[in-house]
Image 1: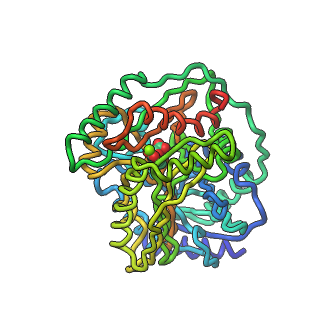
Image 2: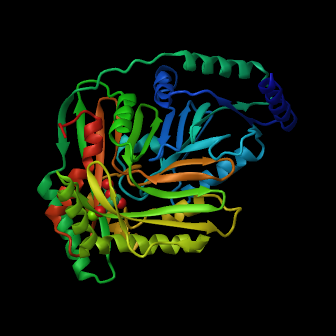
Image 3: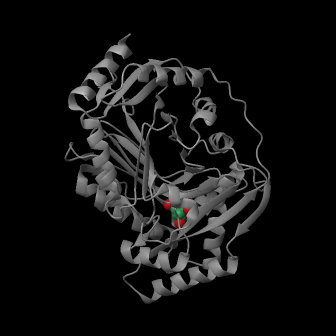
Length: 462
Ligand SMILES: C=C(O[C@@H]1C=C(C(=O)O)C=C[C@H]1O)C(=O)O
Ligand SMILES: [Mg+2]
């Protein structure tokens, strides 16, 4: 069997070098349903699963188990840390991957905390400042082609039994039929006091008015929901898939927690030397009729406050992308992106990377947080967020995504998201506050942004 021969090469290398060597083997398979694949591994791999789907379904990745987990508490350098650790592992790896397709072969999936210097809350503790899994088993569906990768860490004293063990697990999961459980019932919802939040936004508006150097601060709030029984992350994911098909759908599990959501916002994509980013900021609700919806879209497009909020994001992203890319292309005016519950101003950005040896991590590091999540200037805005928000955003509003061994990858901004922990869910929503923001309107905007997660959790009829 080819896989045995290849595994033997890795085992020999591990013996010769007297160290652990990553063995990664990719093959093409017939169709597998990604959600069933994720769900079937509940018993075996809960706490070590991830899920990723892009808006047009061109890329779906499901990872199960963890051959290696990369976690760090370092602050500023958390991006470099993951980049280095990942590079070190793949440098000596034995990789069998005959496919020249992005996302195949060994891939890590994970994300970063929003702000390592913010206050810490216990619900986020196991995520650290960065958390990535290299899965044991991974399914990748790239433009309808199905690939399956198995990753094994071979120690110097291991033998072929290690491969058989993995193949047995693989068979077990592929043969498991999963039946969807019922949604849990909500016991109670708790939001931070409305007036308190509105007041803190008003304080930020005052700061923005007083200080001409300060242009924008993104303020978020959280909602805690308690359920009668444990929440099934698989159900939430399936609901998000059905209800928010136009979004990035993601989940990242660790220990007894699952961070999941449906984000409309790409941070960065790298495919060879092609770079894509997106500016998304400025929001308005959807209309009840086509004509009301169109007229709301027009109002958004012509609204000075929202255009300003948006332009601040475009300027910053343009600067970072120009630093790394040539042939940068950014339309002069935004278009309207319509999601199920909300419409946004949207400007796509693309370019060609100048240095093709560079990985995606430095771009992620320089882009995060964009003024769609932090503010302008970044550091001043972050300090105000720490002072005024008084909560731990955890991985909310942060980069979440994947990187393959060739340095390709994609990160979305993890908004419209929530953390599920047994029978509790913590949902987050924020909005760009500028000097002409009306605090009550910003409250309403965050209310709309909670909807995708609330609906997926079986919350209020929306
Ligand atoms: C911060 C969020 O969304 C961001 C803020 C927006 C705004 O203020 O108009 C729009 C899109 C997102 O970039 C969120 O959904 O929590
Ligand atoms: Mg806004």
